[in-house]
Amino acid sequence: MKKIVSEDKNVLIGTLAYALYWVDESLQASLQAAGWERMSRTRSMIMVNITAGINRPADLARSLGISRQAIHQLLQGMRDEGLIEMVADPKDRRAKVVQFAPSADQIRADAAKIMKGIEKELARRLGEAEFKSLKKSLNHEWGPVSVIKI
Image 1 (cartoon, helix red, strand yellow):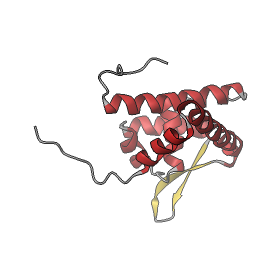
Image 2 (cartoon, helix red, strand yellow):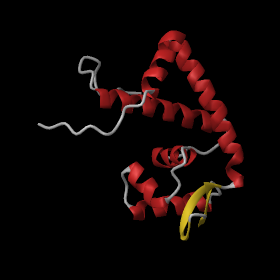
Image 3 (spheres, one colour):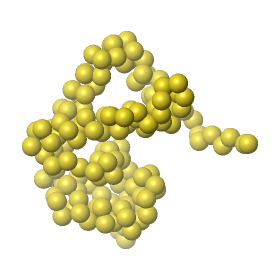
């Protein structure tokens, strides 16, 4: 996989994007090797967001930086494939929330096993101490969004 920025430029956003893409490509290739169909990065990120508790279509669209129309089309396709279901929001019966469909349990279980394996492989490649340090650094609370005046 080609790096987004060269190492000498060391631009954080490119480095973080490369890391995300590498993990997602590893996940998709592993799921495909296990017999599942590859998923687009956007669909993969929808799954990640739902797992993280972001489950209203408008919030998913905002989190992914796509339009509400686009998220509804994506969710419709995922619902048709049995990955998700749309149910009434218990806090607001007029609204819908997204949840995983029971028929998605197996792919989710396989993805969880694969993610553990990806982390193990990355720890092997980077070294256990460096991998733990990377995770620790990324898990720090970064605080509110920074607005840099120029």
